[in-house]
Every structure is written in C-alpha cells, then in structure tokens.
Length: 357
Ligand code: HEM
Image 1 (cartoon, rainbow, N blue to C red):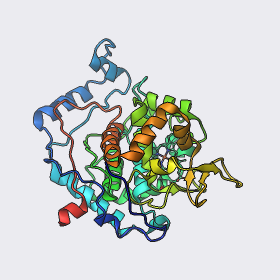
Image 2 (image 1 turned 90 degrees about the vertical axis):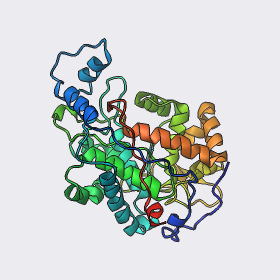
Image 3 (image 1 turned 135 degrees about the vertical axis):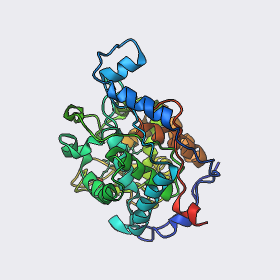
C-alpha cells in the first residue's frame, strides 16, 4: 500500500516529475512482436472483408461490423522503432512541461488517446481507435472533442518523422507516453491500427460521455465500452492529470494541485468535502478546503453511488492497486474494437528516465 505524500503547489511544477518515481514495479522483459505468420494472418483477414459475413462465428462478427479492424502488422518495424517514436514524443512533452500553466501535455495527450478510443460500441463493434477517424466530421466537430485539435497538432510532426505510423497508433501511443512520463504505470501497447479507408466508419457523435450526468449514465457509457464498475472507476482516475478549460468544455480548473503527476490523488480528494461552485458557468463542484479544485458532476457521481464508491475508497487507500488496474483498463481501452492475432505480445516502453539511468 502506498499513497502520495508529496504535494507541489500549482505553478511549481514539471521539472521534478521525472525524479518522483511512484511506479515501483521493476521493468519487465521487453516483449517482441510475432513475425511473418502473424502479419500474414492479419492481412489475409483484412483483405477478405468483402465476404458475406457469417454471424455465427467469431470472424463473421468482425466482418459484419467493425469489418477490417484487424491489426495490420508492419513486418519491417520492431520494438526499437516504436521505442524511437516513444522517445521522440516524450522529448517534446518534456520540452513543453510548462505549457498550459504548468499542466504540460500529460493530460491533453491522455485525453486524446481516450477520446479516440472512447467512441467504441461493443453492441455494434464500431468505433474505437483503429481508424484514426477524429480528423473527419462529425467526430472532429463533436463538442466533447473540443480542444483535442491542440493535441492532434502537437503530434502532427511525428506523422512526417515516422510516416509508416498510422494516426490511431500515434494518438494511442501519445497517451502511453503521457501516462508513463509523468510517473504513471507502464501501459502495454500494440501497433497495427490503419488509417480510415471507409468514410462510413467515422462514428456518429454521442458516444463520448457528457460530464453533466449521473452515475447510471456513467455506468451505461462504460458498459457500452465493455468495462465493469471497477474498471470504470479506475479509468476515471486519469482525472488526476490536466484540467478543464472554459474555452473547451466550459468547465474550469484542475482536480488537484499535482496535475502533472500520475497519482491516486483524484480518489483521495473526491472523498473530501465538496460544494457546488457558485459561478456563471456549468454546474461543477469546488473543494471546501481551498476552493481551488474541481470535480465534474460525473466525477462526483462516483461518490454518490455505493457500487462505485467502494472502488473510489479502495484506490484512495492503495495507489499501487490503482496503478495496476489503470494500466490494464487503459491498455484495453486503446485496443477496443481491434482484433489481434493471439500471439501478438504488447510492447512495454522504457521511460526517458529509465534510458538515462
Ligand atoms: C464519465 C467519463 C468522463 C467524462 C464525462 C469526462 C469529461 C471530461 C471533461 C469535461 C474534461 C475537460 C476538458 C477540457 O475542458 O479541456 C476532461 C478532461 C480530461 N479527461 Fe475526462 N472525462 C471522463 C473520463 C475520462 C477517462 C476515462 C480518461 C482517461 C482514461 C479521462 C482523461 C481526462 C484527462 C487526462 C483530462 C485533462 C485534459 C487536459 O488537461 O487537457 N477522462 N474530461
């Protein structure tokens, strides 16, 4: 069991993140991608998406809905190539530690990875990160995605530096970099997403969550994504990072003072006392103690619902457990709707710090 003890005042942020290692897990043996047979399988399935689907078998289901969302593996590239991309993104993130009033780019890139994946619907097996479809309307103009053009612009140079990488891979890898570089857990990640080829696969708006709603709504959204209550609470703990912007979502402020460090602070704070903020804006909560921090109605709903509350308390008590659960759930989120041949093992990237040691 551990909990965060170090607190940094707002404004005095960034540079110390890299020496504050909350993640104590020893780096595991680096995984490698399975080669030719796997890639061959992927391409075979991908190229067969004109077949009449047979809904009674697994493959039939894939072809009927998220047809073609099968990982296409690049046989020319290996772990080292992807670690190189990771490093390039991480160095730019490090250079912009002071951006957004000290929040850096950690929250922004985590949110891009989440929103590019969070359109997934398990009932229709549509949406998700595979197609990198957020540059197209209506997804690009979804109000819930307001501000994410900043994140996509931040990453755009890497399309030129690494033209073999798809948008879906780049955006999800950006989220992995963000979480790991600010002290979060390792996020196992696999490549193989393919840029949109079928315009009809741009998801309709309405699948990304509306922050003004209650616990039942949150449960419904995350059930549609294929997550249970525990995973839902673990994922929303990413609100330890970054902040809300009045010119993006209409909400205002960070959830806590250590908003550029990945910690279990979100849960610790949620259990403290809050009141509805009096202001000329959307309904949000403000902490009794300092009136400096915020909670969205959907965050607060986790405290009001006994089934969610159980996990809020659990993660507030035990940061290691939160890290473990978040890692698993976030990794799964980034792969929703993507079919991987069974033997494709995920990569576990080293942080910049680990490589400097
Ligand atoms: C009920 C579910 C959720 C709702 C309603 C919600 C809503 C929001 C809203 C309104 C913002 C403010 C955006 C802005 O003004 O810039 C935000 C920010 C953020 N969200 Fe969520 N969110 C949810 C779940 C998640 C999940 C599952 C993750 C990641 C796993 C996540 C990660 C973040 C991060 C890191 C930020 C900060 C962005 C920044 O600093 O620019 N959120 N969220």
